[in-house]
Length: 343
Image 1 (spheres, one colour):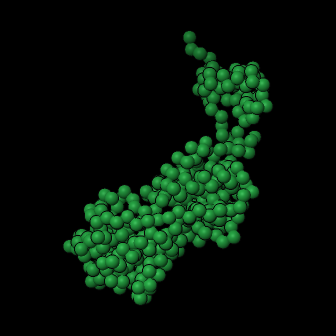
Image 2: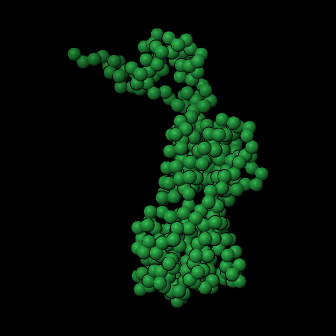
Image 3: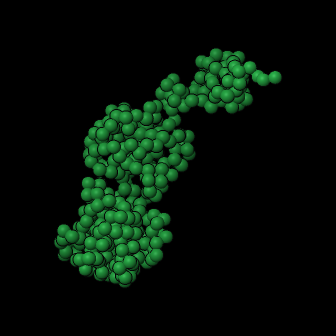
């Protein structure tokens, strides 16, 4: 005989707090106290509620719980994008640290909206804190994040006098190592920097150090020695093709904004009959798996992506625990990994 429709519906729907209360013979308020403030409930009653939770395999709704406790144990992280190894590594580090500390991670790539629709892009709902990566000037997005009035950590952006924590990568150390390495076998006039968008904070920091190191060697960087485009293989190919047509690719040493740009340059060089590193020396940025798969293997400046994600989560959890502590800025170092492409 078929079970009544109501019984089938009851079995198919998620277990609710009312179901737990009914099984344990207590009110829903008591179940809520057991979940959120168990010290307020008599031990025998708490044990009966926990037994009902286990038998019914009840999983509390984090957001409903957050409405009552004002704590969801969910952290939000908003990135310009989630495509590519750098962002996947950053998220891996953030998620691992969040789980270690007993938090869940809510991820969004809507920060790429550059302030357009920022209100909806940061509508994370009940999060205990937000980590926001800002890679280019974007006052609207930052103001919207501040208006959320939750603990905030900003990644990749330094704001003087800020009342929030920040985690930034020190591009200077790794860039300086890379440029000095390239100068060991190539004249300053033949060294080039091929970066991402000119407005990008990392691009600006790297080209600044590139210029400083060459100037310290008595060379003023010419306009065609620093180029800006996208963090893509296609941009690397375009730059290299134009350079080769002008007869300037051979004999050059190139610091690239990321490993994808370096890959594009290497493809053009090899297709043009040039040898890497004999005719063209290359150093990438990020030290991604792509660089280790390339032949010759790519020298690259290591970016501590996973460490950035983990540090952001640590800072948020500390801020959630102590909202009154002074804002802190954490700087993580970069370093050059030398392989065959630049020797």
